Length: 202
Image (cartoon, rainbow, N blue to C red):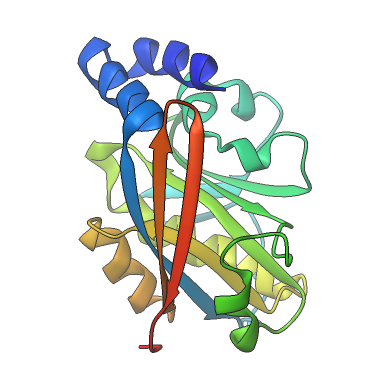
């Protein structure tokens, strides 16, 4: 899995970023904020594709998932799983993608922290990626995708955001997400240790 990520990173991000990625996966520490967001079906159902914030939002097609940048940021949870994938397109170029996985189960290390806030069915936000020069697409992508999921019957979204990623935490809060736990992930030469600390919602 590290090898696949490293090879794709070399092609999209260059050597320096790839070395940093490999080091984090082998001997790094990561902090995440775990959030829960309850969904309400939109008053008017969203019919895809839809234009918003200068991009076109639609469900990913088979060809989209072969896009180099989409493959680079596709989370491991989305491979071989029941997943909803949405993309943001601008001038025939994919500038963002979002993956929502049917993986909110007691097997997850954060499940005990989110369980009191859950209304089934729920989905896990495995990743949302937007190209650095198209950050305005993040709101449109996350909002449209969650409205489509809500209209299909999904009632809760769970996700994790890097604790230092202030723009993404702000976006999560603006969309109605509440942070319910902090998750610490420690990598030590292929072994991963996870600890979860519940926090007051807000």
